[in-house]
Image (cartoon, rainbow, N blue to C red; front, side, top):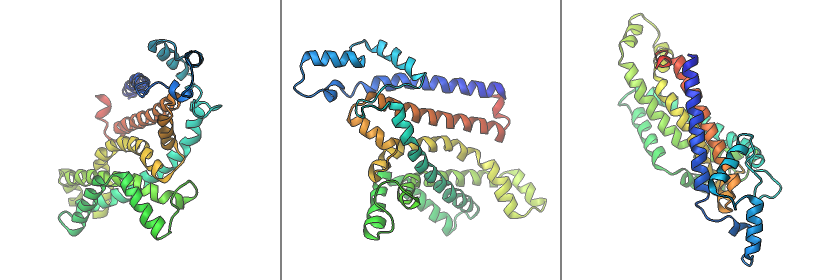
Length: 306
């Protein structure tokens, strides 16, 4: 078990290292940040002075080594757009808002998708099953940002039930939470349904019924536990999708999270903030998948020996 966890942990570190090289390279494809930092009438001397101050006069490999050395200490540099603030401090300040929204979206997706997926499998080829297929189709077809705009127009502008934008109490979270989690509702529902259908046809389910166990116990205790591995696999993807998907939703609802911060940083070519946001997002995603791998080993002991 310990070797299995250690191997997965080393794979996670390797993934973060590779990602750091990709992020560092792609951030510089957007253009010269000096064009943003300096006015149009700036001369060559000013360009040289500012480039030397920010270390942009050094070769790219030297910049990357400096970046990695500081990143290992949690230092991603000072923001160019938000003067006086470090990149990591900006991300840390905005991260709770993103995690709050993503947590609500994840809760919405689980609470809705798992019961409907289970019941759709149990009541196969019934109107409930057809309704679940329709929900799944709409959920995976509608772009989240478009759904967010429609929800805002109907429930905030027309009906006035919820605020249109900003961060506040639960009422501010409902519309962006639904828009962010709706796609995951459809995906988890389909996975839960297909996994339950396979388990319901297995021999051990027939044995539990022959022993006289109540039907609710057969379905919700024995079948759901064995069918949970496939949806659990998607849980790691869900966590990353909720974080990266928050970029569009936070822009639509002006939610002050790291997604909106990333959009503003990209527009300003603020390399430090862009790199910090992506590394933090990747860290959360990789950690979530590591937790999922460990949970695999407990749900199915055969996996830990692979």
